[in-house]
Length: 460
Image (cartoon, rainbow, N blue to C red; front, side, top):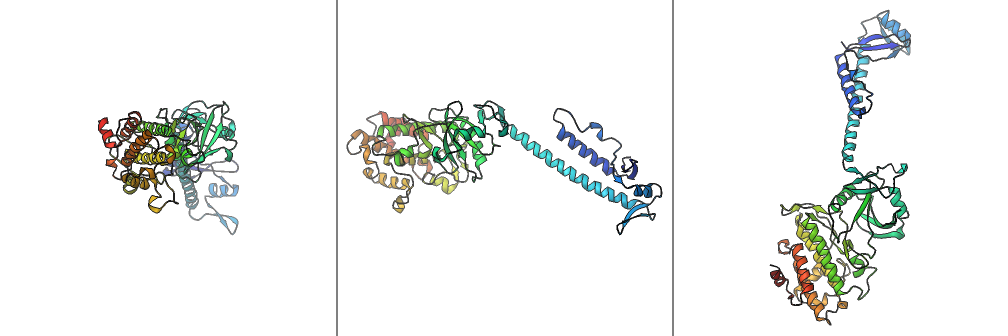
C-alpha cells in the first residue's frame, strides 16, 4: 500500500500517513511531467515513478522523531516550546501532513496543466512557419527564427529598422488607419516599402496575418509584390513590399504631386483599366479588396498601376451571395448598402471603384467637408451632375472636355459607367468584369456610344 514517510535530520525514515490519494496524485503528476519534459530526447521523469511505493521525505527535529517513534506520542508546539503529547495518536500530524501534501499536489497539478496548454498553443502557432532564408542571417539578439509565413521570407526586425534608418520620419511614404509606410534599402540593395502596423490597432495581428495570407495567393502585374515580413512574435509587426516610386493616384489628382495637366486623360484612362483589371483578377480569385481608394493605387515611373493594402481583404466563396460582417473601409468609398445592411458582396468593391472613377474624372477628393453639405461625399455630387447631364460641372477642365471631341466622348461614356457603379441597389451595378470590358470598349472604339447600356449590349 502506498505510504507517506518522514525523515528526521539524522536521515531515519518514519511512516506518517497512508493514503491511496497520494499514489493517484503522484501518478497524475508524473504523467504530466513526463509529457511536458519528454521532447524526443532524454526523459527526466522515469516511467517507473508510478509504482506501488510513493515516499515523501519530510525533515523533522530529533525531539519530534523520538516523541513519535519511541514514545508513540504526537509532536506539538505550545507557547513556542516543544511538547510531546501521548494523548490520542498521531492522527493530527498525519492529517496535517496529508492536507498539506494534498493542497501542494493540487497546486502542482494545476501548474502543470497551464504549462501543457501553453506549450500546445506555442506548437500550434509554429505550424504557420516553414523554413526559408531572409536577405541575411539573424543575429542572436533578434530571438526570431529564420523562417517564412506562407512561403514569404521573414526578416529580422533589426534589419528593417536599419533599412529605414530607425523609421526616420523623412522616409515616410504614407500613413493610413492601420499603419505607416517607410522607404528603405536592404543590405542586398533592394529598395522596399516597409509597412509598420500601428501599436494602438487591436486587430493588427489579425490584419497582419490576413494580408500575408491573401497576397501570397496572388500573382498579377497590377498588384504590389510582398517580399516578406517580420515574425508575428517580433517586437513590431512589419510587412515588406516592393517599392513603387511614383506615389499614389491620390497624390497626382489632388495631393502633393498634383498640377494642372500633369495627368492627361489617356493616362487616367489607362489607370482606370489597369485598376479594374486588378480588381477583376481578385474577384476571380474569390477575394474582395474592401478598401479600394486612390491612396491604395500606386504608380510606377511609367504610371503603371500597382494596387496595394490588403489588410481588410477577405476571401469570398463564389457559392454565396453575400457575407454578413461589420462594415469596414474608408469614408467616402464604403458601399451604402454594405454600411446599412452589413452585407458584403463583390458589388461593394464595384461601388468603391465607381468613386475612384469620379476622382479620375474630376480630380476632386472623395470627401471634402468644405463642399456644400449634400456634396461632401463625391459620390453624391457625381450622381447629381451625371443625372442632369451637367458634365462640365463635374469634369476637370484641364482634360479638354470642351476642346477635344474624343476626350468628350470618352469622359461622358466613363461618367455613365460610373453612374451605374454608384447605384444604391447593388443588383443594379455591373460586375468588375463587366466594368473592365466596358472601359476597354470605351478606350478602343470610336463608335461606342456614351450610354453604358448600349455598351453592355455590345458585350452581350
